[in-house]
Image (cartoon, rainbow, N blue to C red):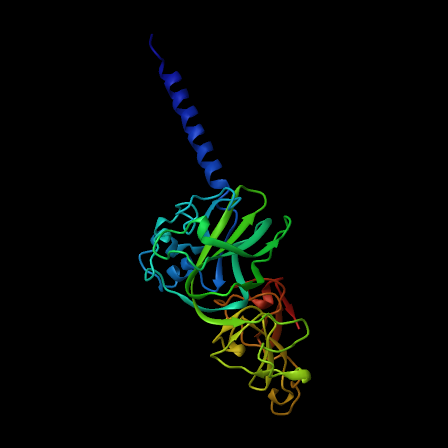
Length: 326
């Protein structure tokens, strides 16, 4: 029996369509949502920043550590948790000296995600390795203890997401797993943080305390002067150059007048121009096309002050709806 050329051509076309369909299904759930943890910096982000070495492809896309969801009941296999199921296998390598470590304290901490593509969300979970874990074997479920969880019930988050948590008492090297479960696909995002805990414990701030946890502010609610060596939590207020700033998320060493981690709360009236006409106006830095701005951030452009309505980068204030003239 001979097969005509037209039939062979038809079979090739049918097979090609099948392959395209399979690839479309395979990638449709992996390109729609991405994100990474930058406070504290995740293992993947430190690969991009050059602090970690021999990381493989994640050096170019720390936001793409994505794998099957429904963790820990399902999801990725033990030994592939750090890589999102083997997407970037180098991330699963484990050893006491393999990865750069972020200095941290136990207790109150604000985790921050940057999302490069927002997505409807089920939940955010945070785990830390148990006190008796083995740092020289790949990460597995039995190593982890859940300590913080947020349920978004399918809501779509902003491009900047912060969560106030309380980390159990730890000392020395431990790994934190930050987990983002999206709502309308079967996938999730895995971000591990290599932390070196200093043995200190930051007590959670009670509502209305208005201080940085050291009691120096007292009942007058005056902010302390910013200290570059001190760790600040979301909501902490400091004074810098006569102005008062409030922390948006955990930060340490970030100059309040030059960092998106801080928002200007009030300005010293003496910081205006020489004749005092601008004494009550916000002291906003000049707009920079390379800087990421968050909702509420202020900038100056062509002598005017603009406020960001949401996350933005590279959008000119006088030519974009994301900026509102003040």
